[in-house]
Amino acid sequence: MIRINLLPHREEKRKARREQFYALGGLMLVLGGVIWFLGFTVINGYISSQESKNTFLKSEIAVLDKQIDEIKKLKEQTEALLARKQVIESLQANRAETVYLFNELARQVPAGIYLRSVKQAGQKITLAGYAQSNARVSTLMRNLDESPLLEMPQLVEIKAVTIDRRRLGEFSLNVSFTRQTAEDSKKPRGPVSAAGSSSKTDKKP
Image (cartoon, rainbow, N blue to C red; front, side):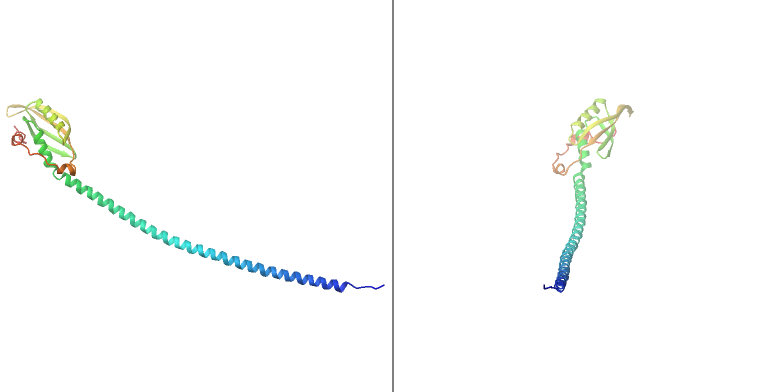
């Protein structure tokens, strides 16, 4: 009977398997290192690209913030110029306001009314004077109410006084003055008649 010793063959086979395992493990390690390096490189590239984008966005945001500040300054300057323009237009429209006021009073004050003082505070006009009768004061208030520049007359007081042995009514009333616009100031206004102005001058009886 022939006996065959298989131990060396098995040992060689076992050794070949170990070498194959080590080689495969080494290959896997190398392949893992390559994959890690590639992944690390790609991720770093994405991070660098994103950081550059963030830097660009920050710089653009800073430019936009600066432009917004400039726009705000320009807006403030524009509003200030508009406010000045409105003031100038208001001054231009109202520069002859006193002339219009006295001209209108000369038109609306009836005969028998003598104005002693005319005071203006804003749009409020206070008239004080003397009247030959209470009916004259009523006529004055009616004329003022129908005036295009004066409105809402309100009688403050009226009392009887004696001046140079004449019985007169001393009155005080308030009336509102309508501000003139630029268009109104350009409209021509008719001259006051000499008769009307002579009968409505500011003098005491």
